[in-house]
Length: 328
Image (cartoon, rainbow, N blue to C red; front, side):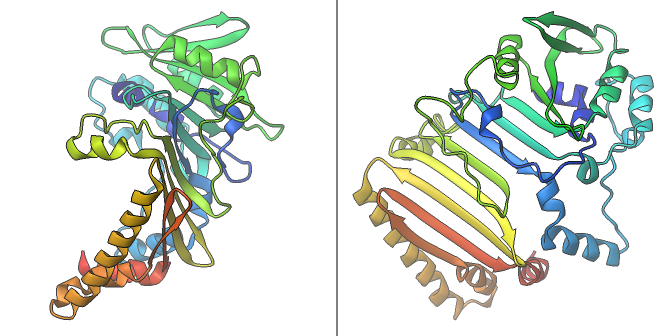
């Protein structure tokens, strides 16, 4: 899936002109067990992004968000003539991409579904990719499926489905390495299969806060951790995990929720974390190098709600960037 992402990098930098790319449960399969979502347009409006841009420009190193195909070391991933045509589209990450969502069923992180909210520029990108050796497309159950090849072997690296999502020209691009998986996603988008919004027993809440620009949620079957030592034992106690990061009134807000199968252990863990935070503050009085960590800890709050551990973090964005610049 990593290689296939490089085969179609233009899909990551397409034009979008609608409101913020919020998470849409109605676009996800009913069986989805984990979701990671980035709202690029919401992030582009944050104080954090504007401040990072300002500071980089002041150093004479302005951030370039345009996708520069001519300056990329693509090797054999994309033929040179294709890269040149993509370069002419002048695709820009933060101006053009609206949102990106990765989702999966079960614990497999290697082959997720990918959803990108873009504009009609996607058709220009596909027109370019059609010229890649080995490209093909077919219509299945009325759904147009594009097959994106490896330019060396001409074997299919990824499948793509595009659907219009609004009168403003917004489109949804679905990408998957597995054809069957792509068709499952396409059926959901076209209304032929149930979505996570109308599933009988909804596994995920899928409700980021209004200020959110990054969101992750998973059931207790946390992807990628089942073989990671102690982490695998921790996941046996976890029913679900949520991470929500956003910005409101110039403050970075992050919240982690961990729902446990054992409420008593949840309360015990919260007490331990609160104690560690207090110990760090005491240690900083003897070690100035720990002062930055203590400042960050002051933005943390630990609490429990029924069987759920809730960790809140809030910090003024400008102060946070000052702190990071000073100590990193």
